[in-house]
Image (cartoon, rainbow, N blue to C red):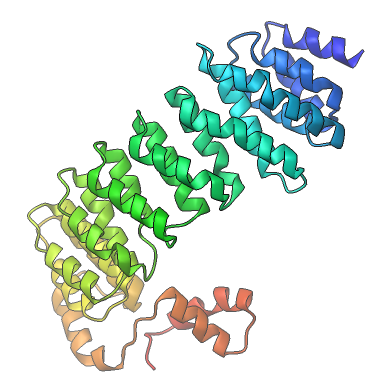
Length: 362
């Protein structure tokens, strides 16, 4: 009876009906519905709202032991066949479902391997939008080693920027840019990718504290012909920190483009370096109001001195207090909180507040 009701609901022209039926099935799933849902995926060009519910219901019905058996059959058969279809819609639903299925903590190893074979095919042989979908679907898999090489290949040779961005995001979130191979791939994309949105994404993900290996690439990217890339590189360079980063950012505060001067100020904020304070004070007199206001807000944030936006006032204060001020990074603030014998969770919330009640004098 439930099968007939579901089939009837999926055929209804009012989208609220199939949505309600699929939501109900997700809450009370049965493995016997896997074949019905599989047929429904390719039955018509579904609205995105319904397609997402199809994937969710299919996942719910696939998690039991019986359901995983049906899922493996589907992955090896109709789901893989859909990858070569003229309409990418069904393939995207199956890819989304396979990614969520393989990422499940209770899934059997055989099921995960079958899901990977299907996703691997999607990464390398699917249409451009399907390749991007497969890359996104793998974000929940963690550092799954077999996925590394196909993702790097997609990042370097993907036909569309969408696919390359998806591969970059998944590599960064799963393997991380501290991983040598991933970092090298991201740095190469920052330097060579033809699309500025991919280079921009690469610059952003390289902004990891103390990732000194990324410093030369980010300094070079600050000269990118696309200002959005150069701005992101400047901010990320500040997040990386280090003397080389501070020097490059200080130099950028005299750039002819106000957007670069503003980005350099934000980058200097993230360095937590005392050398940046006089430079930020100088930027209070920048001819572009946005840069001057940004420098003022940054000075308030890192020194906790809420003075008027006046370089003379901040200069006088800095001459008086420079030798007794210490700018702490968030990691140093956490460590200081832990030295007060707080738990890590308590230290994370307490240390910054403790250090912000007055100028940091130690």
